[in-house]
Each structure stands twice: as structure tokens, then as C-alpha cells.
Image (cartoon, rainbow, N blue to C red; front, side, top):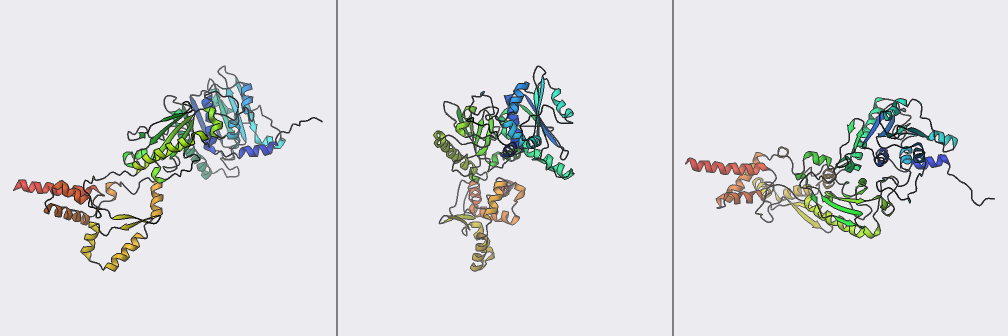
Amino acid sequence: MDRYEDLPPRAHAMVASMRAIGYDLATAIADLIDNSIFAGANNIWIKYHWEGSGSWIYILDDGHGMSEEKLKEAMRLGSQSPLDERDPKDLGRFGLGLKTASFSQCRVTTVYTKTPEGVTSIRCWDLDHIEETQRWELDTIPPENTESILANLDRLSHGTMVLWQRIDRVVEMDDPDDEEGMRTFYNKFLAVQRYLEMIFHRYLSSPTNLRITLGTAELKPWDPYLRNNTFTQELASEKYEDGTVRVVPFVLPHVSKRTDVENDSGAGPKGWNAQQGFYLYRNKRMIMPGSYLDFRIVPEEHYKLARIMVDIDNRMDHEWGIDVRKATASPPDRLRAEFEKVAKATRKVAVEVYRARLGTVRTTRVRGTSEIWKRMRRGDKIIYEINKKNKVVKEILDEISPPTSWINKLFHVIETTVPYRLILMDNSELEDCHVNLLPEANIPSQELIDLCIDFYKRYRDNGRAHEVAIDLTLAIEPFNTHPAYRAALDSLDRRCDDNRQGS
């Protein structure tokens, strides 16, 4: 009896396991784009067609293509060991990406390739055939009725096409071929577009200038660091491991220093709060799109302007624990303390920028009488109380002279029903939506403007100069919340000057 037995995996079980690795449509397409980039492609076309259960997707590139032997090897599961030395530009590692990404989305994967010499080769994995025969039989004949699709490669001098059919993880095979199904199908690619623009933004930018077309849209790079904004802060960079690891922290501008377009685009696919933290790149390809890796650092609203770029090369995959999907990573132990230090230093600057506010410059403050809300600590809790000493609040109460018991009851109701959670949720989804409102969104009433003028006049009657009286008045909330207050005081002073000149 032989000592060793050949015991290959059961085909149907192996296929099911490979389909469950965890890809979604965007990450699967990104994995195929990695292969196109390594093949030297200048252009990549991603096309998709809705036809119910007959829908299809293909990824076509103008890279250098493959010989028949290389294609057969590329279609092999585990075509290369992750321990093998790789080309420094290789974006793969496990020899599984083409297969696992494709199997995760479809049941039929056809690869058609053409070398610069014009030699074409084709191979196809059909999961239904594998499960039926229980054999890893690679088809050498393309599926029926695919000639017109595959012809898109024939128009190129060289390149490769990966065609997905029976895309059961993208289109439910039992769903009717209706308008709603078509709309759902096409909407999936809106998320794919944003994801690819993020993951490959450095390839889409100069000097590489890779062109990726999704449907009819040419992808545009998404810069997580808003480097075209002069208020973005690039902090001191660090290099580790003889320069093979490079860390560049960025602190993005305050919302008041960003355009509406930057406020929208800067949020990225996951939103401002979730996009903070480390951005890990392997050979310029983004692996982690904002996170604190596995550090015990929690993403918080006040730190969402902190984004840290980290570059590594493909020799460090094992040390960083990068998985098949290129979706998880963890820094080696020897770098953890340094990385945590960088994160905390970047967050410190970020919170200072986040708390900055534009508005009236207050050169003079009257302690205890300016703010309407007081921030109070009760043990480990923070509460907010209405400041009864605020001059505007006091003036209004004196004018209506309500009983003290009424005032206490009213203030208690307001103070105990402040919608803290709702405010936090709104502010997280729409950054700083409660502050720096457009002037037309919070125009003060004429009564409040008149009250502001009354305070100003009192300071003037007490011998204060115009600018000093303005500073004292506008140091009192709510007179610091809208430019209309300042405009009214400036206009009043000009009228006084005109009257003096006329006399």
C-alpha cells in the first residue's frame, strides 16, 4: 500500500467555499482591475448589460495579454504560492484573485486574451458543470451567443477580457425581467463607481493617468486628502523599515473652509465620520479606505478631519496580514506604537480644526453674560443649562415679568428635552449642518435687531466708542449669530455721522 494518497477537495464543496469569501460586486471588480494594471493596461473598460437572468458584465483591458499556457495557469486555482517572490509591481499575492472574485459574482467566467503578436486564447470555468461532474474541467470553448461580446477585444491590438455570465450574486435568477429589476441592477454600479474612484485614485491621477470607463462614465480620482484645498494641512511625514513604509498625516479643512463640492465629495463613499483614520496603500492601490486598523481607537465626530496615508510595498503582505480580498490589514507589532502615536497626534490637530468657528471676532467678553447656554458637568455626564444671566434672556424676562415659578418650569422643560442624539446624528450625516448657516436661513426678527440696537446705545451713552460698543454688544448671544446685527449697528453709526455732518 502506498504511503500517500491523492485526496483532492470535493469540487462542489470547494466552489461553495470560494463563493463565500466575502466579496461584493465592487471589491470583485477591483480585484480584476488589479490584474489589468499589472498587465500594463492604459485603458480598462467595464461594461454591463441588463437582460434579467441573461445579464452580463465584462472587464476589458489593453494590457499585454497572455499566451495560452499563461492563460491556463492563470485559470488554475492557487496558480502561485503567496510565499513566492513577486514582481514589485504585482498587485496580487495568492494566485486566487481572478477565480475567487469571479466565482463570488457569477457561475460562468470566460477569459479571452490576445497577445501583441495577435495570438488569441480562451478558457471558461462553468460552476454548474463542475458541480455536476465533480471535476475541475476547464472549458476551451466559449459559451454560446457570446461572439458579439468577445468581439470587443478583437478590435484591440492586444489585451484581455473577463466575461461574467449567470451573475446570480448580482441578479437574482428567479427575479422577473422587469423595469424594477433593471433599475436595481444599474443602481448597483453607482456604488461601484464611487468605490473604484476611491481605491484606484492614485492610478487615475498623474503621473499614471490610468483610464477606467464604467458603462459610459470615465472614472475621476477621489482624493481623500483634499490636497487642492490650500487649508488642508499636511503634517510631518515619517518613514520606517528603511523607507519601505511611509506615513503622511493630513488634517482636512474645517467645513467653513471648504466649497459645497468639497463638502460632498470629501465625505467619500462611507461618510465623513467613517472615512477618518489610516488609508493603507500597497503599490499605490488602496487597501484600507479609512479606519484605525485594529487599534483601540474609536472613530469620533470630533476627529473626522484626520486622515493618514500609509504606503507599503508587496513584500510586506504577510507581515501586514493582507487577505485575499485585499480588504483587511494589521500593522506588525514593531510598528504599532509608532502608528498609534501618529494617530493620536493627527487627531489632536484635527479636533482643534474641527472646533474652529467662523463668525464675529469678539475682542471683549463680559464673563458670565455672553452665552445663552452653559456647559455643566454632573459627575461623568455633560448637561446644558440656559444662562439666566445672559443679558438678552434677562432683558426679555424683565420685559414680560413672568412669575419665577413659570420661568423655572419653562427652562426645566427646555433643558431636559434637548435632542442630543438627534443633533449628533444630523451633524454626523450632514457635517456641521447646525452651525455656519446661510444668512437667509436664520434671519433674526426685527424685535431682536431692535434689542441689539438698545444694548449698543446704552454702551454709547456710557461713553464707549463705536467699535468698543459694537464688540461689547456682539459678545452677547444671540447677537453674534448673524451678520444682520453688525450691519444694523454699522448703519446706525453712519446715520449718526450723516446727521452730525448735516447740522
